[in-house]
Length: 96
Image (cartoon, rainbow, N blue to C red; front, side, top):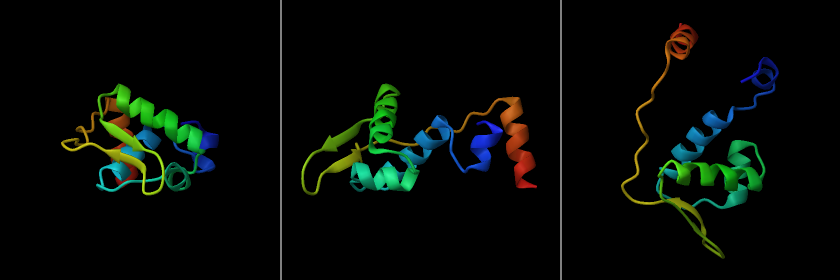
């Protein structure tokens, strides 16, 4: 994330997709506009991020109409967090 983006409160694509995955793991359906509001992005960006999750093998289902929305299929879990040395150091430093 750039320094400017960090100041403005924007998330990197990776961070945003992980937040999206966390929301979907709550076991409920989310409308596109609802997710967009939670993530601070457009509904179109939500659709792209859902496609990213699908490309990674997550079964994200989408139902149109009243009561529809995005939902994560059963048996999906958040993968373990893998950090390189620089990311691990930055994470540890931010916790101090």
